[in-house]
Amino acid sequence: MTTSLTLKDMTAEQIVALSVAAGEPDWLTERRREAWAFFAQAAPPEWRRTNLSGLNPEALVPTQAPQGTAIQWDAELAGSGVVFTTMAAALRSHEALIKAKMDTAVVPLDHKFSALRAALWQDGAFLYVPKGVAIDMPLRVCYTLADANQAIFPRTLVILEDNASVTLIEEFTSHNHVAAALAGPVTEILAGPGSSMRFSSVQHWGAGVYHIGGQKVILGRDASIEWTSVSLGGQVQHVEAEARLEGNGSQVHWLGATFGNGTQNLVIAPWLRHVGYNAESFMQFKTVVNDSAYSVFDGMIKIEHESKATSTRLEEHALHLSPKARNDSIPGLKIDTNDVLKGGHASTSGDVDDTQLFYMQARGIKRDDARRMIVMGFFEPALNRIPVEALRDELTGIIEGKI
Image 1 (cartoon, rainbow, N blue to C red):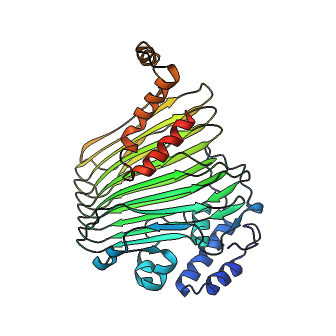
Image 2: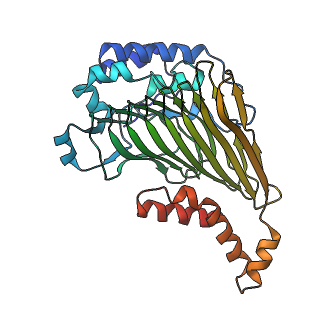
Image 3: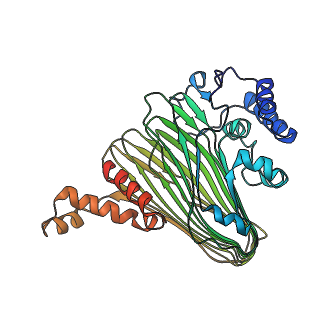
């Protein structure tokens, strides 16, 4: 269900009234009011590489109640103390935990769009894994945006206690829309000491969707995450993502796959932030652009002053399938300590290798098939990390349709 009010017409009083009508706790109502007040007075962020000119707030109607969250899991896991439910349900059953943990990773008042997300979120998933519990089967949450001229702000909150283990797929999907729609997701993952997680975030919105998201993982001592980011859909994407290696001995292995075609503008700004001692991280993103698409990888490694014995590397590699397509690769490294074991970054960008195409054609493979095989092989490391075969096959089909 949606309210008839557009973003342009809403006020802080209406935000409060909607929260009270939904029976939300007072602290959440106040957070929404504060976030909306910030949104209303803040200037838009200066994102030079993100084209938001087609996004018209006068036409966007935010959802009034949860309507696009689907959770897949084995309910028998509840017997081990695992909680995997909607945020609306979790507010009733685990209010104190949500109040303490929500908004501690992704800063809600960082800029105009982060405040908008904090004020208007409805859809969402809450995952809690108790101490020492290991979940073998993948859990999955899918957020669906149903209509054009709609705004949806789903949020995922994951809390892993000490030595817990889980695999989670977060998926964003919709039909193609003629008019613009807005998705503003927030993902917060708090990984306790010794915990481990495999996390796949898959964005394959239909055409016309503007995706402005924030994602952050905070890792405790000896915690680890295998993070896979797949970005294929939407008209415009701007994602600020960060893995914060806060605990000593924490580890991140982060792979990404981005494919833009048509007039898509896909931007991702992933950070590896080292705080603890003896922490290790590796990031590798693969990007393909076709037609007149424009993609941006604005990756950064930040090694804080208190960090010691860091080992880290960041890479981005891009393929151009059209002379009109463009990819900007902006890898960075900021070091504020003298104690680093290894730190580096790199990027490559170019066309599909003509020699490789010639070699494959000489063996009877048609040129289009050869190019498709090269692109699929390029993305293989990231796609192989998707733990559900049906989803992996679906993404393969989407990619093949873009080549």
